[in-house]
Length: 209
Image (cartoon, rainbow, N blue to C red; front, side, top):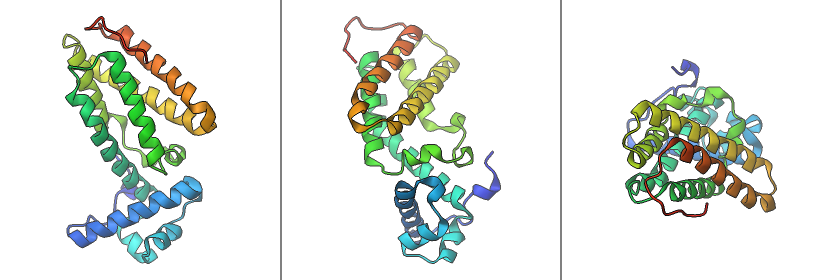
């Protein structure tokens, strides 16, 4: 269960309130992208949003709470871009899935400016991995690839996949742009090798990661 101190103070129930919350989250994204999590302040977020500090505190009690909201926003967006992988689960082979998943992830990271900065945010700004809808989505893909595996096993594979992707994201932020492409290929090999060892391939056709 999440600490009460990071829950939103006020849940908007009208369009105007929802719009204001979206503006505050967008402002938090911009500030965190520029200064990092530690450097971001509630005052800077309010100023970027063109809101009073009191208005910000009406919705979010502290920086951890608005960061949690930003993470949830990113999570919904990333889940949406991964949805086609679920729809294509029975037509993709494992190598294609791995390659597309990592390519989608890198594109998402590059197009969401605060994503890498959030890697340094404290664990209190993260929802438990067990409640991450991506875990269910990935598990569904593995079940489509190999219907004979048990659901708990598919969930375990999904959890490990998420941690491999997390490691890729962490390394990605530490590397110079010129180095990133070669390491992306290495992570495609790592993830494919792991999943291939745990799933019985359904197809002989192979695609080079």
